[in-house]
Amino acid sequence: MKSMREIGIEKVTLNMGTGTEKANMEKAMKLLKKITNAKPIQTKTMKRIPTWGIRPGLPIGCKVTLRGKKAEELLRRLLQAVNNQLNESKFDKGGNFSFGITEYLDIPGVEYDADIGIIGLEVAVTLKRPGFRIKRRKRQKKKIPTKHKITKEESMEFIKNKFGIKFGE
Image: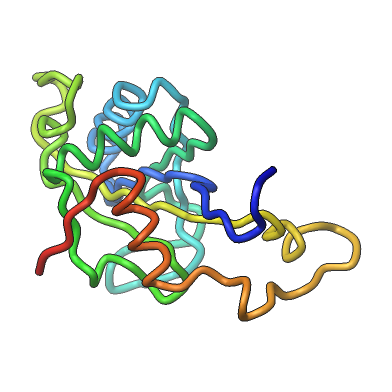
């Protein structure tokens, strides 16, 4: 029987900011497809920033979200790309963490593609516990009690035990 205190991976999201250039967007979409074997989606701006030439609805990046076993397998490969080492600063107080990969070539199983060139990406990992659904369900939404939330220390311990991560500065 599963314990209600057991921590698991809810989702792994790969993000790439490309700016407003179409060529960069195509490269990023191709790279995310190559890494995950899942279809990436474009992220669009919500605000208008005239000095940067940004208006609402303009595609400026792309992302892929994976859940379940696929997410866990991909996370193992992505952590190998950073030598199984993370800083404490990469974890937020809600127990989630994110890190960057400067070159996609560091990811095991991904080979260089001349069309893409050398670019990096960001990885965001969201953790969960059984019972976290209460904050998103349609009927009787409730807040997650403070004692049931995942702390920074608990998430660091989970990642250390499950993936063998070392923490450095």
